[in-house]
Length: 483
Image: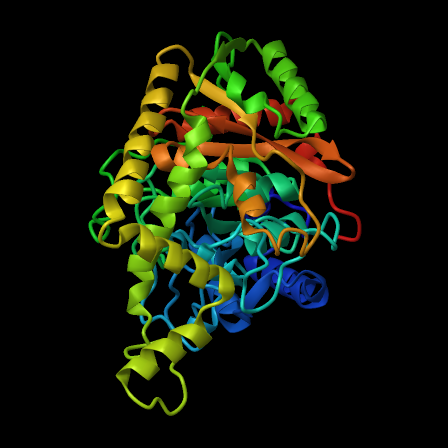
C-alpha cells in the first residue's frame, strides 16, 4: 500500500479495496520502523490519524466521495494544528501547542485527509538543507549522507521514502521546489495569494507560500485542489476562482511556447544537470512544444535582493518571540532586558540569529534606503523581466538547482554557498509567480529536477505540462533503495 499515489489511493478507497483505517495503520507502522533513519518527522499524531481515518470511512460508507477523503498526509511543522505541537523546527516553539488550525489544515481536514504527523524543517523555514532544525538534520533517502533540501526537507524525505503519499510544504525562496528536486518529487509553489497563509507561521510575509509535495503532478493537482482558495482571514489571499486542476491535466502540449533563459546556463550550473535539462526539453518538443531562447537580465541581482528582503521581514516577524507571551522563556531572568536577550539567544539557532541580525541592520536608520529600498526596486525589475518574457512564451523552463544534493555539513561553514543554491528558485518568489519542479534524471545516483514557471494563477498549465512529461518518462517512478 505504501507505493500507492494519492490518485491510486482515491481509486482504491472508492473501489473498497482497503479502508482508510487499514492504510493509515500500515503507514504509521512504516513511519515508526523507517523514520529513525531519516528524522523526517517532529511529531506523530497516531490517535488523531486513526480518528480521522475512521471518520473518513464512515463518510464513504454514507455515500460521500472525494479524491482526498481518507487520504493520509502530513503537515510541515509551521502549519498551526489545534492542540498539537507546532514547533517551526525551533527550540523557541518546542512547547507551543497551537490553539487553532491553519486554514490549509482545516480545509484539508474538511476534505477528509488523515494527518499522520508534523514534518521536520529548517528552523523557521530558514535554510536550503534542513540542517538548521532544533530536532536535528533530515537525511535524504536517496543517500543518507546527503541533505534532502530545505526548508521543507522533512516533507520531501517522508514522501520520497514512501512513508506517505503527499505532504504540505512552504516555499519562501525555493523551499518546495528545491527539496522536490533533491528527492525525486514533484513540488509546486502556487501564485502568491493562491493558498492562505493564515495560521502558517511567518518567515518573510511577502514571499511565503504554501503548496503540495508529492510524487506526481496528478497528486499535486489533487492536493492543491484541497488547499487553494480565498480566505478572508488572510489579507494577502486573492479572491480568484479555483479551477479543477485535475480536469486540465490531459490537455495537449501542441504549440506550447516554452522559454529557456540563456542566463540559466552560466558557469555555476553543473554540466551534467544542464544535459538532463536539454533531454527534458527534447521530450517536451516530441509532445509538440516549441522552444524559444529568452533573457531574464536582472536574474543576477535576485540573490542579493532576496537576502535583504527576506531577513528584513524575518527580523520583524520574529520580534514577537520574546519570552513574554509564548514560546521559550529563559530561567530566572534578572530583569526585562535579560529576559529578552537570553530567551531569544537560547530559543533561536545560529542561522535564524544570523538572518535576524542582517534584517535588522538592513532596516536600521541610515541603511533602509541603501539596502531594503534598493532591494525592493530590484524586485520590481525581476518581475518586469518575467512579464516581458511571458509576452513571448507560455512557460519558462530551466534547472531547479545548479547542483545535486550536497553532503550533510558540507556548506555549514559557508552560509553564502548554500544561499547561492537558490539562484534559480528565488526569482519566482520575488515576482510572486507559480513554479513547479519535476524529476528529470539522476547525477551520481542523486535526483535532479527541472523547473517550470508560469504567469500568475496558471498552476493548471504547470501541472498539465508536468503530467504530460510524466506520462512519457519514468523518472518520477524511481524509488530510493531500502524504501
